[in-house]
Length: 138
Ligand code: HEC
Image (cartoon, rainbow, N blue to C red):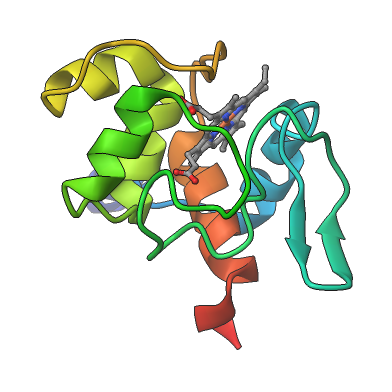
């Protein structure tokens, strides 16, 4: 009986752990394939993840002011969000990719963005991956 109870407690603990939303960078790297059509991760000459130019370079995006990549033509809303002092962190980036329009609305901006993409799940993982390849990880 005692063994059985121990087993039950263990099983519950094992189920409970993955429910905590902690990003997994390895999973995030795989999930970034969904972003690469529009985003690259490039640090000067170093190409970390080859990708398109529809969206801004995401190198160092964690800890960077929103809408601040030089030369990229952002929507008014994202630019205004950045100018209000908003800086990306892992939690907000995970929220953004889930629904960029709702995210802007929740941050008092017009819900108009050039990013026409929603990631159903795994936003925390992509955020953890982006943080891991950013300048802070060095
Ligand atoms: C269909 C193209 C497309 C896809 C796919 C896409 N994005 Fe974007 N993304 C954009 C565009 C365009 C912008 C600029 C939005 C604006 O100006 O409103 C953007 C903006 C962003 C920003 C804000 C960057 C900044 O400098 O403030 C982040 C963060 C971001 N995308 C992350 C992601 C991630 C992570 C994925 C994959 C899960 C992804 N995007 C998939 C097109 C895309």
